Length: 174
Length: 328
Image (cartoon, rainbow over all chains, first blue to last red; front, side, top):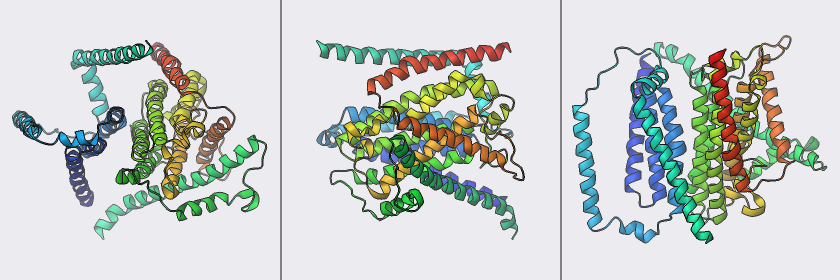
């Protein structure tokens, strides 16, 4: 059985490289389409990491929601508002570079502090994939209020999007 | 030797799964490609392919060879890496859902509690592939086809999922094997007729087939998202389309038509698999039949039908199911 452990290790590093490479592609690319695809690759890598951690449910949800829905929505947005090439290159010059570096550093420090302070207690023992039941129960009991609030925010976003779209259309008709 | 002994069963299993997956994908494309052209011919009162072999049975093999020999033309203004990536991205994920489909109570790649989720997750990658292909071709027809495909697929995924959820509520599991086993006295098509109808409509839309084949509407968009593709790149899209048809029909069979249940055949252990394939190909015949019978819908009609009728109906159906499950 030791072979499987090695295979798992190899897969872990493969997924990690995939995640980092995707992230790198998302940040470095000048074309927005490439960036979104990089993001998709990175999120697929994260799904693989969930799978490695023993939760195929979370992995599949990651693929379904992030790759299947979020990335497609972003791509749609990118294609509708097509960025001219010159503008895309201009964004990487001058003052923007410094501002971007500053924002990245700030984000890095915030995440680093947060991760450093968190305590990662390893699970006492693994009894199959309990995540479906556990996620369902904690969402509907412990974090019920947050869950409901998120759904209200989503509803607001949908209604807002409809109002914006309709407004544009009616003005055109006039 | 010790190591070999420990990994050999798994290794054999993996190899068998991979070979079977490839056989299903390519065999299905051959059979369906021929059946589709022949059926289309007979529905239009013409014979269909007749020249190659007896009644044209070898036509698809010759076509496949021709496609393999053709040059891959990349448009000059296309985004080359993405252009080449799109067909692969469309074709590669179709193998994973085949693993969780229970062809009979013994024939299954692996039984996992989230079988349905695996199928839905990997089916959603196909949309991304179409989008990438349409965008990177740098052609207005392709882009329009890709747009339509995404709008259509994202919309029709919702009623599809909700109609399947109604069945999941009744069986209390996502495992396809257990869902198929749960309908041993009555098939769910009798218990859940509304969900079945909604699923069938959503299935046609999800596989981008007529009357909902707006992404490749040839009268207005030449060939939609794959206008610029030739040779093997084009045939990878076709293979993926037929494989996706097979997968959605298998899901319909598992969820509504009792999976592999049927009259056991004498002297044959895997009669379940035969019945399963019979049901799947009956559904595929239905898909081909309506493709060559009904005219294409308009795009606004298609979207209105989904958002104004299918989603509310499926939600009401889900609600009624939940109440009934609670009461009984």
